[in-house]
Length: 471
Image (tube, rainbow, N blue to C red; front, side, top):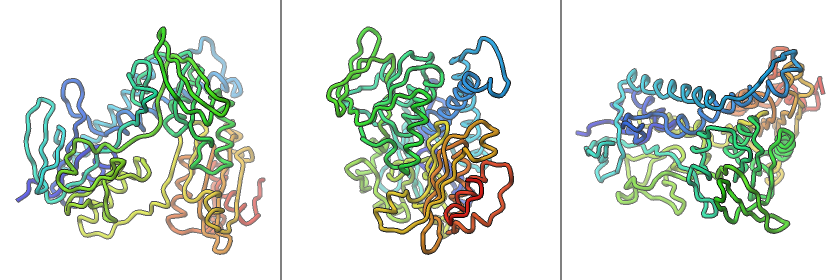
């Protein structure tokens, strides 16, 4: 008889959610997590909670408050003297936010009677797992089903080897203890733009080097253009088609060599952040040795049920590819747990929300206009600027717009793209509408409170049929 009905490997957003849902459904559950502090105490929450989503948002919020006070407080009649940023206090607050949430997960495990096991997991034949603890001791556990949720790690590049002193990965970038005079960022994706924004707001001269010729190539073109213009206005020096060829630490600074359409170029910065993406953390798991298929990029291959090539062993989250998003991994965890319980749970990957937490935020769901054109789909566009929103104007945040795309024949909403204040929150209405296969008419007929930012979504829906009132 197995020790558990389910063992989950990894306690990040995919793993801990899967464990909780399994336990809620009556399965005897354990969750293995290798993360520990310096004394060997287990830390739950994975990359997202400890060195990713949550701490970055804590610093983004702190830096935004500072930036607002410096640039816009006077517009609101708020005057003060001796404004300065205390980075140590910001870092302390960030740590407190993370600690509270990791302790919260531990409380949820206790509430749901989940056994939390500290150690590094290695898969063995027969759905057994060898666990090596922080102190080097080993033990073996078995389960009827195993869920792999080991997540991802930052990608490194040969021209910029990370030392987390001068050349930093995303983890090191979250621990900077003073505002660098000059900061370089390799990569203009979500991580690069968010981390660059933090230090730019606090006074650093930030240069972002992006190898691709287009800014936010995966986003709607008009949204991307508006975001690029605004971020440049805020001080981010974004250089496209800039491929880094080498770096050198010299006199306590980082010399960064790159090539663009004009040939060889160079910048000198105090710190350099490498934010070129993430890769699956599947090495050392022993997966291939027991018959689990891993592709050439290191992703674990799964079927529609998220089951690997070995019956009874599943994988979810970043380690299986697709969008590397915490909410994607969490929902996969719920789906696998419910399918193990005999329920018919499923996910709609084409209705996946995406957010970049700059300010203003960039958020979208569904198809972009360029995708619809490429597919030959006829569509209508409703576009509403936040400049015309009474609530946005009262707030003093009028940059950006909402763009709603609807099928020209059926009026079904095919995509919603936002650049503006609270875009991440406004997007939820669009995701729900698309999950319910709503039309733009459905949103247009829905009464939205006044004055709210959500009225901009209402106006965009009206605009898809040429009926906007306020623009």
